[in-house]
Image (cartoon, rainbow, N blue to C red; front, side):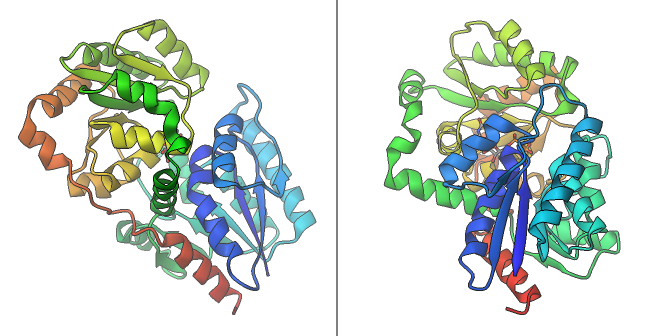
Length: 372
Ligand code: UDP
C-alpha cells in the first residue's frame, strides 16, 4: 500500500522525516516522498541532515510569489503527482500552503488524507496568517487526524471532528531526540558553533528567531530595536540566525549592523540550531516549532506573538506570550535576566508536546488503516 508524503518547508521536513523513517520501517508500506520546495534552501538543509532524498521534487519556490500563485501552482503540481503515483493515502503536516493544497488535491481524487499535527488552533484567522485557515481547511478533508496533544484533540472535537482523531505526541520531539543523539555521537555535526560558544563564554545568550508575516514591517523594526537594547544588557549576548525572507533580512541588516554582542548568522541547520538552543539562557521567538522544542530543553521561551495555537507551553509555565512591542520585549527579557526566581520558574524541562514516539504511533495507525 502506497503512502505519498508531501511537504515543502523547513518545519514540515523536521516534523516529517521521523515519520517517513517510521513508515519505511513497516513491512507492506510503500512510501513516496514529494517535496514542493515552497522554501528551497531551508528545506534542503533538513533533507541533508536527515539523509532523505525526495522521490519527487516540484521545486516550486519563486522569489516574491503571491499566496494565490503559490497555492495555484501547488494544487496543480501536487494533483499531477497524485495522478502519476496513484497513492492509497496522502500524508500532510501542519499548516502550510503545501499541506492545504496537498489535502485538497487528494480530496479531488478521493484519496484519504492523514494530517500530522492536527487540531492546533489560535482561534484567530489572522494570527498566524494564513496558517490558521490552512490548518482548519484540512480538518474536514482528513480521515486520520494525528493530534499532538489532548488540547488539539479537544479543539477538533469542538468542530465535531471526532472520528479518526488520535493523540500521538508531536513528531518534533522525535526529531529533537534523534538529532541530539546524533550530535552526542558526533559533535562535529554542530561544531560550527564552537567559535561563538567561545566568544560568548560566561555570557547569557538570548537566542532570537523571527519570521512571522504578522511581524513584517513595524513588528520587525520593533524587534530589531529591542535586540539592540538587549545586547547592551550586562553579561548578555544575542545569537540570531536570521530567516532569509527579505522582509526580515533587510530590517535586521539596517538596524543591527556590526553590533558587538550580537551574532547574526545565516539560518542554522537543525543540529546547529539544537545546539544553539542548548547553549542559550532563553529563547525569544515568533516560531511555532521553537515553542515546542524549548520546553523539552528546559529553556524559557518568550513568544513575540499576540496569540498561540500552542497553549501547552504557556500552561506549563515555560512559554510566555509577549507580542512584538519593543518596550515589552525588553522588559520581559530584563526580568528573566535579572530575577533568578522568575527565571527558575520558567526554566523547567518538560514535554507537553510528546515523548519522542509520535512517528512510530503514526506509522502504526497508517498501517492499521490499510489492515496491515
Ligand atoms: N530552525 C532551524 N534553524 C534555524 C531556525 C530554526 O533548524 O536557524 C528549526 C527549529 O528548530 C524549528 C523549526 O526550524 O524546528 C521552526 O521553523 P520556523 O520557525 O521556520 O517555522 P514555524 O515552526 O514557525 O512554522
